[in-house]
Length: 422
Ligand code: AMP
Ligand code: GLY
Picture (cartoon, rainbow, N blue to C red):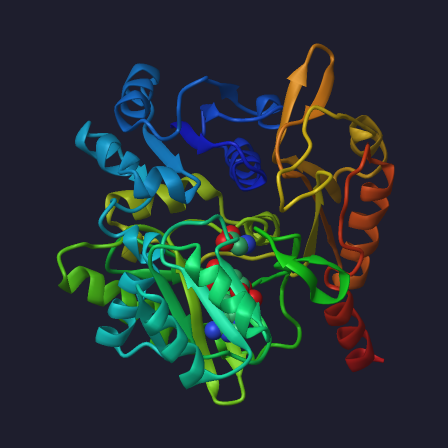
């Protein structure tokens, strides 16, 4: 099978890495890709947001499967254009992707499906905003209704800051603060059958100790030794299946990856958000643990045959990924800085640790930074402690002027797991 992956982040590098290890994949292509993806796939300089161009590329390559990585092309209808060209595509329609593209739509679907989530108000005027903030009290949660790459959400105790964020958006969702650890649970679905993957945890804040602004994600790990063993089953029953069924009922079946961002509160599991695609950086750790070859799973979702698929097989290993970001991320990042040490990681740390590229490109012989999140350094180990050690050893070999990374990815979970077995 020839496969075309759309996107250019570390998530797409992780997808391409897994697909490149799948014996059923005879050729792997990516548009537009990055310097790391170029090592496992042939790159094509096609605009990921242009559905016609993507469909034309896929047809020209004879692709038997197109995998759309990021949300923006999905919301722009790229999966619809590929499907209309008769090519199997992993990724929801524009209509179904509204689950991520509009927080207000997601809230409406959840209400109809009885899915537990934070109570919320959709506001368009300063008066409505002030009333909603007053109704919930601090900490205030203010979300831009549209796509904002994980950066449209402000959680703050400062009423003026909450109002100021709302004033900068056309339409906002203001909601109740959810206390408790966060879990990202992904499910692959063909619009009817839902196959959950292993849960992961992401670190959304820029700085150690969950300080600083929200980012797209600074690191992740899987599994979650502290989570209830029944978590996945419970979320499948109370969140994932009802949501997929509701979209089916509305005539907008969701096929592709349904990402539930969850808070495990004292009153039970609540949905923080849905995304319509694999999470970044959680995908890096989830796929590091998936033993079932990936292409067949994604194709079954695209073709509506997930019910026939045997259960997924998972490695017992733990996986950790640490994001190396540019100077000033999540603000306007500095780009064009050379990255060195990548060869050392490949020579010293493989196969347990490896570097997935996000914002990188080639500049002659050099690899230079080209975005906010630059690398996602990923490692596996017998437990989180070993996976962390390996990931951070590899991070230590990489040099990128002005770069930043968190030093506490998976630290608490690793410690707790060690204490439990001691
Ligand atoms: P979202 O884009 O909706 O995932 O929000 C980004 C981040 O903001 C989440 O991962 C949470 O850390 C935080 N957040 C969002 N909604 C809430 C909420 N209702 N209560 C507490 N934290 C939230
Ligand atoms: N890691 C958060 C996201 O992919 O939205």
